[in-house]
Amino acid sequence: SVHVIWFRRDLRLNDHSALAEALKEMDKDDQLLFVFHIHPALTDEFTVRHDYFYETLHSFVENAEEKKLPIHFLTGEMEKGFDQLLTSVEKIEAIYFHEDETAFGQKRDQTFEKWAKQKGLKTVKVIDHHLHGSKSIVKDDGTPYKVFSPYYKKWRAEEKPMIHDYDCQQLKKQMLVNVTELKEGKRAYSQLMQQKTGRWKKFAGEASAYEQLESFIENDLATYHVNRDLPEKDATSQLSKYLRTGSLSIRSVYHAALAKADELEQTEGVETFIQELAWRDFYNMIYANYPNSKNEEIQSNYRDINWRKDHDQLKAWKKGVTGFPLVDAAMRQLNETGWMHNRLRMVVASFLTKHLLIDWREGEKYFSEQLIDYDAASNIGGWQWASSTGTDAVPYFRIFNPTRQSERFDKHGRFIRQFVEELQDVPSKFIHSPEKMTTEQKQMYNCSRYPDPIVDHKKARERALETFKNQ
Ligand code: FAD
Image (cartoon, rainbow, N blue to C red; front, top):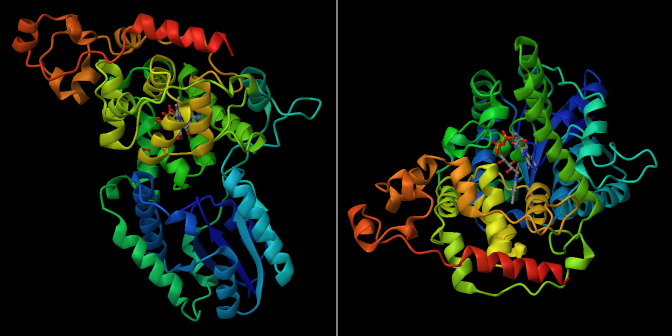
């Protein structure tokens, strides 16, 4: 009989829980079949995020094919896609996949399971994307946590899943090769591949992910707690895009970090890093419990905020021309690289929602288009944190001062100069507040083109305080 592995946001061959599960269940004569369903939602728009995902898919398919492990494509509405599979392949015993706890994922899994039941097919759904799924770390009374610290305490004490140990080189022996070609799926895949720009080739796929993991563990993990807040250092793991697409399993990241701790005398870097992995699980848990939180504030008293509809200021924020150098450098980093440093995500999200008083959903949406690591749970979590509307969010009265953040986390303005070309020649004395220069000074330092601040910090702060206080 045939055991089907349905790949989704887990585009790798190593340490794949669904595949490991199938291998455990299979007899010697059973066969494996790999499928990827091109869901209509994957093609409804084409953003930077899509471009990166397609590139990852391409890398995955090529790598698998090289190892003689062909991926078969299904297309159209899900049930129709899988109907095609049943027509082409006989004796399917079970379909294995990873549970997706996001709002979209939950619905998809339910629909699929219903369809499979009607067809008399066995489905095997496994937790894989997180060290702990949304239901496994709960309060003693069984209810979900809302605050991170007690969640983390329990999370940290809980045993973590191990890396699955199987040999990818051996898989080809069990691969079903004689499949009537799924032509429609193949065509849909080719069409997707024609759309990708090639911009992300260097940063996509399993090999690139492992290289990045090794380099981070070797060079930056030990000092992660010291450098992680300094954008110019480039000292964080940059693994988020691989975790999002599943080029890398979360278990391989966790266990590589732990193994490094054994070598180190001082393990604060490792501890801080592991805590960040817990934030990822935490926000996944929150999103699973608040599936409407992409559209709706989690804290109900903030659902009627009168957000400003200022198209020009929103545009200035997106383009990185607000006149606040750190905000602008951050937005340009996003636009140029598809990634933004965590400290800066907090700064720009706070700036949009508090200083400009523009709806956090606008920011969430823009990030969803531009980030190659876009992850709904973490992004919504981050935005609702910054706009003070989520669980365990920053209190509304603690408003980041973007100039002060700049002085603290980019003291010499090196990061700013890296991304804001107009401020290249500006001396450190003025780099955080270039508006303080005289017209002559601006001319002297070639930065007359750089805009003045689009809002006054003090007034904007007061406006936000007033708005939130009255909710
Ligand atoms: P590292 O510092 O090396 O951290 C290691 C891993 O831990 C990350 O790869 C990530 O998987 C996880 N992690 C770290 N910080 C967080 C966090 N605060 N919340 C959840 N997981 C975390 N992360 C995304 O992966 N996708 C998003 O779409 C996303 N949107 C965000 C939006 C806002 C407004 C904010 C404030 C944060 C957002 N984050 C998001 C979280 C965080 O900024 C990124 O995970 C991190 O910057 C990725 O870089 P890194 O891999 O070098 O992180």
